[in-house]
Image (cartoon, rainbow, N blue to C red):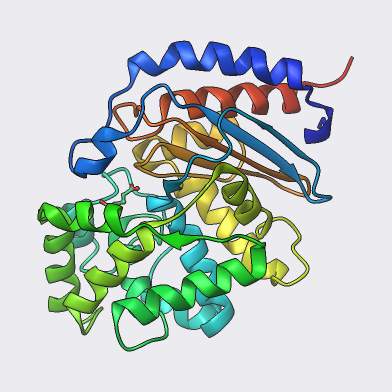
Length: 302
Ligand code: GLU
């Protein structure tokens, strides 16, 4: 396989202009009002290698909420706090063909969350974060991530108010089911924690740096990083996960804000952000860029 550091800025800027043509195919999500105000034309990428070589294009200062991209890092933190055995008593690791916020999937699974990349799994894991309330639980995750990744992730309060301004009936129904089946004990704190961790925010370089936690990071257990990468590979891109896993071949996770993070094992990470989403909820332009890069890296040198 080719190296991330072989990619040239010229190649990247060509792909970026192609990707920006794709954004009209996508739509901004409508269930979080503030995400409707995102600029559809913003497109930015950062490639980082484990030796800290950085190639970044577009507006690298723009901040966005991680939303579901926090899920693999929630899992990573809890694995390091509590170990694999306890965590996988609480959630599974199988892909789901239902949507990320499906109640039906949870009911079909008798209340056992299928994996940590869908909402039932992430809500269950959010309830396990150390701390007595949503603020403390979110801060503990935020501090751990910032300490380990040289990031300065912050809780975007305006985004949080926007998330809280409309009742998210699907997440509420999942929480009720999880409470009924005894997976979680405190529904209100769990929802509050989940909403807060989804609103942890940063820029594209910080997202790429977070990705490095999953690439031979000296302070992270290799075993835990491997567990998280494996689950991202099969469950990270919503209902498109299975198809895209074959196609891209890199562990990836997307979020409703329009970001996608892909890990190139042994090498580094690729972070992209562009708000318009396809029908499965993946950023159209980000996915285009990741696919281009994956193809270029997998193409054998002649
Ligand atoms: N807060 C969002 C939700 O659960 C995150 C979803 C996502 O990024 O997929 O609805």
